[in-house]
Image (cartoon, rainbow, N blue to C red; front, side):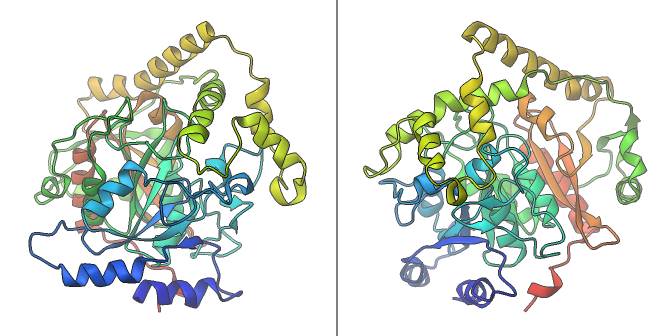
Amino acid sequence: MFFLKRIYKYELNPEKTLNTIIALNPNVLNEARECDKNKSSKNNPIFGMPILLKDNIDTKAMKTTAGAVALIDNTPSEDAFIVQRLKENGALIIGKANLSEWAYFFCNGCPVGYSAVGGQTLNPYGSMIFETGGSSAGSGTGVAANYAVAAVGTETAGSIISPSSQNSLVGLKPTVGVLSRSGIVPISHTLDTPGPMTKNVIDNAILLDAMKGKDNEDAASIAVSTNYINEIKNTTLKGKRLGVMKSLLSDSIYATTVKKLQKEGAIIIEYNPEEIDLPNFLTLLNLDMKEDLPVYLKMNTSENIKFKNLEEIMTFNATDSLNRMPYDQGIFDGIIADTTSEEDFQKIKETLKINGTEFFQKPMKEHNLDAILSINNYHSAYAAVALYPCLTIPMGYKNTGEPLGLTFIGAPFQEAKLLQLARAFEIKNPVRKSPSEYKE
C-alpha cells in the first residue's frame, strides 16, 4: 500500500509526475494480503517485495506494450519465465514501467525514455534537466523515486547500466544465459538479457537470485547453482586487483573513487586500453531483430495482435505518424534496408565477439585483474559483444546534482565476484542519496 500511495501521489500530480508507470497490477493488493497470511522464516528473501517490470516483459495480469501503440492491446497468456520465477519465490509484481520505445531500437535521435504509450520519462534527480538513461528508463526512475523496492530492466548494450547510473542505482547486466529471455520483446537473441535494478547491492543479489533458473525455451539459458545472496555476506576489497583506464582519471569523481578503493586495500593497475573497433555493430542488432521479433509476435502476443513482422508494424505506424512515430522510425527503416548476407553476418558476429573480448581479456590476463573499472555505460557495447557482465553502483554526483556510476566489468559468469566487489565498496562508501523532491 505504501508504494501504491507514492505512485498515486506523484504520478497523478502534473507537477511531479515522472511518466514512469505504464500499468499497475490490478491484483497486487490481494496478492499482498496472501503474502501476509503466508509469512514464514522459510520464505525466499524476495517474498513480499514489490517489484516493477520494464514493459517489454510479459505478464498475464497486465498488457505488454514495449511502449509501442502497435502492442497497446497485447495481453500475453503467459508470464515471462523470469516473472514466473519471481512469483514462485513470493515477489509482488506491482506494475509495468515506461521505457524507451522498442527498447530504444526504433527511432534515430529520439530522446531516451520516450515511448508513444508512456510519454517522456523524467529523472527524479532533475526533472526536465537530466536524462533518464535508456532504455530501461522507467525501471530506473521508478526505483529511484521509491515506487517499488526494485525493478527488472533489460539490456542489449547499456540499457540497464545507463539508467541505473543516471538514477543513482545499483544495476547488473548479467552474462547472457544467467537469466532467461523467454517472454521478453526482443532486439537480439545474441546480446539481450534482463537484469536487476535496485537501491543497494543486497537487494540486487536477492532479485538476481530469485529470477535465476534454467529455461528450456531459451537456448542460451543455463542452470546456475550460485547462491548470490550468500556470496556477498563476506566481502573485502583488500588485495583485489582492479584495472583503471588512464583516460578516465580525468573525471574527478572517478579519480577520487579510485583513491578510496586503494585506501581500502584494492590494488589499482592503471593501463591504456587498446583502440579496438566494433565494426558493423548495428548490423548485428538489425538482423537479429528482423529474425527475433516475428517469433515473439507469433509465440507470445495475444490473439488480437495480428502483426506478423516488422514491415506490418511500420505500415501501421505510418498511418498515424504523429501519435505512433513522432520521431520517425529510422532504425526500423535501417533494419529493413539491411541486406547483409547470412555468411557475412556470421563473420560480423565472430569479429565483434573477438574484438570485444580482446578489449577486456588482454588487460585482465596481463595484469591478473579481478575487474575493470568504468564509468556509467561508457564501455557497455564492448561488454555486450564480449558477453561480459557489468555492475554499476552509485559513485557520486556532479556539481549539478546529476548522478554518476562506478561500473565494474568482469569475466563471463563472474556476477558473484562483481556483487562482492560492489558490496565491499558500498559498505565503506554509502554515497547514494534519495532524490530530494521524492523523499517523502
